[in-house]
Image (tube, rainbow, N blue to C red; front, side):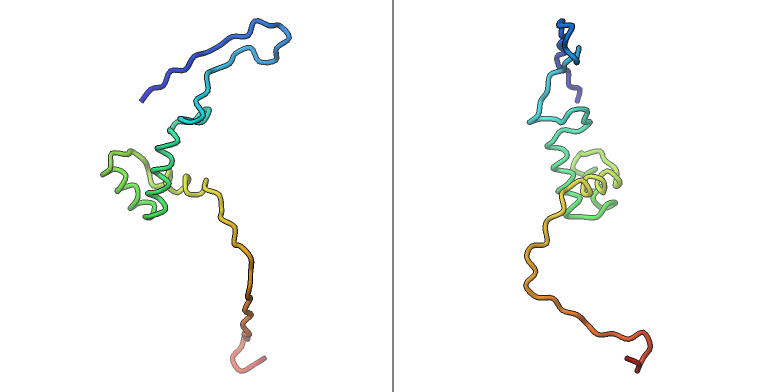
Amino acid sequence: MRLAVRKFFCRNSACQRKIFTERLPTFVEPWAQMTLRLIAAIQAIGLSTSGRLGARLAAHLGISTSWMTLVRRIMDLPTPSAGLVTALGIDDFSFRRGRR
C-alpha cells in the first residue's frame, strides 16, 4: 500500500519549520512503515505464538513479516506492572550439601 500525504510550506520567515506534512494519527505513526492495525495484528500473533511459528502463521494469513519483526513488536509493548506484593517467600539454601 502506498500512502500519499499533503505537504504544506510556511512562507513566514520567522517560522522555525518551513515544511509541514499532513498527519494521520489514527491510521499511521509519523515515519512508520506499518499501519497501527497491522502492528496490532503482528503483536497479537507474536503474543499467542513464538517468533518463527508466528511468522509462518502470519504468512498463511497474508501478512509478510519476519520472525524478528514479531519479536521486535512484542518488545515494543509496555511491561505490565507487577501490582502490590502481598506475600513474599524466601527459601533457605546451601552451596554445599549438609552445610548451613
